[in-house]
Every structure is written in C-alpha cells, then in structure tokens.
Image (tube, rainbow, N blue to C red; front, top):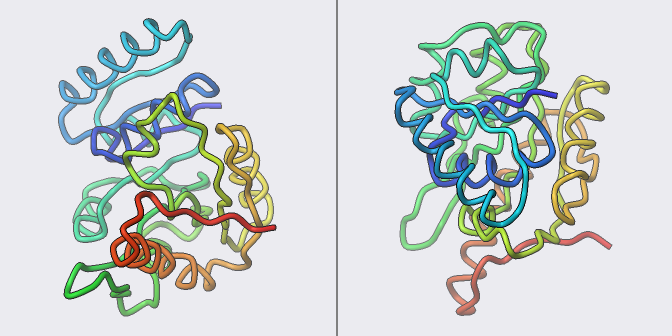
Length: 216
C-alpha cells in the first residue's frame, strides 16, 4: 500500500512518515520537492542506523496525492483550506484527517469551523467521492518522532464509508501498539477533535507530558 502524506515535512507529518515507512510505501509530500527529498534522505539514514528497512520517497504534495492509495492530511488547521484549494486528484481515495481545529488562549480550546469539525470542512472542500476518515488526532508530534518508544494509545476512527473506515483502522493497528476503535460517522469527528485540546490542558495543568488515551 502507498500512503501519501500531504505536509509530510512538518513535525507531525515527518514523525508519521518515520513510523509508517517500515510497514508501507510512504510518499512524503511538501510544497517544495527538495524539502521532501531532504526529509526522506535523513529519514532513510536514521532508519538504516537503526537497522530498519523502510520505503520513503520525497515529492510535491500534488504528486503524493497522485501516486498514493491512501492520503494523510498532516496540515495545521489554519493552513488547511488554503492548501487543499491548490490540490486535486482526491477522487475515490481514502483521506485521513488528523487535523484539530484549536487555539491556545488562556487555555487550549477547540475552535471548529462553520461545518462543525475539520473533517466535515474537508468533506465540503474535496470531491464527493473522496472517502474521508478522522484518525491519529491525539498523538503528539514528538511521540511520533520518538522511534525507540512504543505508541500505546487508542485511536478513534470516524467515517461514513465502512470500507474506508476498515482500511484506516487496519493501518492504525499495524503501527507500534496503537489500537483503533470505531468512533462512528464523520459527523462525530467533532468529539474526537475536541479531545486534543483537553489532553493538552490536562498535561499543562498537571505538569504532565504527552498525555494520551486508552480505552479498556
């Protein structure tokens, strides 16, 4: 399976690429292909030192979409609409949104768009045949990058297309010790997206780091 990461040179995108590339063929996208290529070279070198074979290719965001079977939108919410407006080719593809619409004020808070969630905004922007799922929202960038540590978190997955949801849940379950859970339709994504600022507030006010969630 080929997984394309739009925004793959950002903190979260880069960490996701490192975690996914020993399992899948990962295509790292960026506005500048040179930056994506550099990120992949560094990633390949790091994994080689760890004795791990992986598949990483650096390209533009558009090529990452064109060449991938599944697309991850590792884009900050404030850049989401502008970035998606410059891209095409999502028809019929599974699209994963780990995007959280939030702001840091006196505390972290969820600031959803008019549609009610980032996932529903993506659904409005992309072609109707794009199969959008919410996943990976509550895993911090530095946890993705801490390759020596296991990721032992629960990952809620929302989506309206049952086949796409099963596909995304299968991807989740292959990464470290992550465990996926069906969290309902895409309209329920607002509940998932609002958990991230909650976790950040808990970490801040309790002097904790990288708070996550596990369902038992």
